[in-house]
Image 1 (cartoon, rainbow, N blue to C red):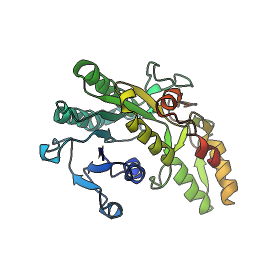
Image 2 (cartoon, rainbow, N blue to C red):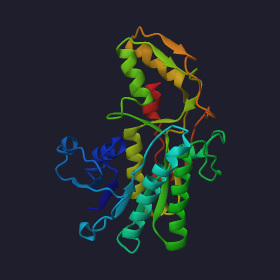
Image 3 (cartoon, one colour):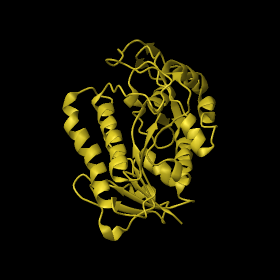
Image 4 (spheres, rainbow, N blue to C red):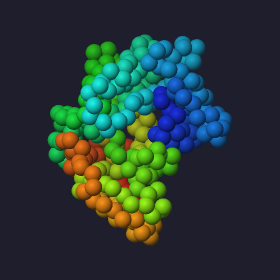
Length: 294
């Protein structure tokens, strides 16, 4: 059985990747924080508590066939003071992992996580060949790690690729994120103060996302050196989601559209072209759960 190391695997995406990938791969999770309670349900998953900003993976832990690097600070803030922490985490972990595994012949694919926010206000449909126009420190640092990972591939033959996810939702997501937050407020019949919510986002259920990642791992020869959007390929307004959820829940909540301003330089339509993903994985049903949601 091939081995997958999931770096930063104790978070929302990592836990769901473990859930989906565990029947098919040997898995090791590496994170500075380990959710021991969650991983009790997966006794075959090896967990290692390490801060990869400060240290390399010990050689005695061996080399996997695949690495999925999720380690990142995620923020929507525009505060320029965030650059130091974003760069020290996102870029330093990538470079430390490269330093540890650069001479390992067993490693077949290194998946570096980018973000669809790298595209900025380029205008939908986002295609992987577009020049990026990041609008936030987070998106700019993601672009930096994307370009670094691909530079390591081009210059040194490191088997890296970049995945750019859409907007994920599903079990275990932080309750402050958009869909869980809206659901909680609506269930409690509490008022919602929101922006006009005309902005559209490309949502993908985390199960569909993790299945797509499995498809990339199984077709790794086609992935090395590539950027691949992993999303539904459809966009929906935040207002449409709120109204659908309010109807489905039967909520009496008042929704105050326009009570909050849009973020500065808000992207109004984020929708990713998924043709490359579907070609690699032969998967064309990544939007089914989105249609069920809306």
